[in-house]
View: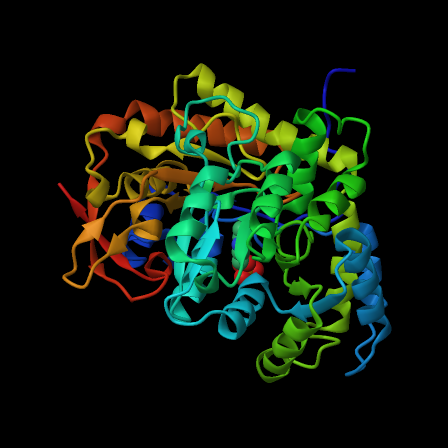
Length: 457
Ligand SMILES: *Cc1c(COP(=O)(O)O)cnc(C)c1O
């Protein structure tokens, strides 16, 4: 059969409701035009993030009941550690309550003021943690990753030449480690090829610089390699993931993504010296090294979820969801990042609203309109999230203005996606009247979460 179906059936349901247009207008106003400040129950299709929003399987719920809540050395920890070691092969695994806690420990132990951390594209929390430790977060994405309409297989790849230039320019002792993010969340969820990871490692080896993988979507990346990279079609997703990790010296993970869990993360490495430094901070900030801020039942759910994310039928279904939405938007002429990413469809806001200046945040214009039209919640990945502001308060726009519609794992069905397509099409037809916004309140780090906006007529 050609039809791809959800490889599960639904045993528990959670009601959603569509509030009226007037109620949505009032809700958005009360939220200062920032969808992060809306109540979730006022959003009928919530595509704010795929992080921690997935549905767990019967196996995961069953595993939760087996959670061993002992403070030290619990059975659940042993399960978790064994699973993470099977997939990643790293010597040391440190559990954390989510991805940014792993990043924070990494940044506080290894980064000195003025250090440079290269990445294909830093995620917002990674950048914030690096900058908070006095480091400079450098994006070295390949050029085609910035061309939203270009069809290419691995638009998340690091540019090896830019990496080499960066190392020569700043000298090795200012680069304590390099990172690579799979898939490249902020660059449209685009995958990184095995060849690129291998070449990045080869390049870094010449200078003795360690490589860490930001591996939140390692299973989705493994699936793209399976589908698109020569030589991998006959390998299992687990084998592909194992090879990806074999080129790295460590990893940071948010189990809220490809852990198929609602909370959790880990930091992993091979170096005994690093592990000791990480462990010291872990105990202070997260908890004892065999639970790291997680309950035993969370560790169990993650151990099952990490392996379920590597099941081929699950990945086929997940990618088919993105393809289904993307192909229908393309047919309507709506500008999106192509090919579609692994966890989300990204609207190109700069092309969607060419009349809105980047410093008037076209992405926010679209996000707010999607909410007003249909109660759909997406998120801006553009100048509000990634723009920079200098000491004089002058703002520089982000190179890309995107709106991300991220799909919670195993949560929405095809009719939800059909509704979403109708909402997006309605917004598209009214695009000429969509306003820009200005910020009326912001904080220094991660401003997009809490800032306030007002419309600019
Ligand atoms: C989500 C995410 C993180 C941070 O993880 P949290 O669990 O949200 O703290 C880091 N990097 C990438 C690429 C992510 O997508």
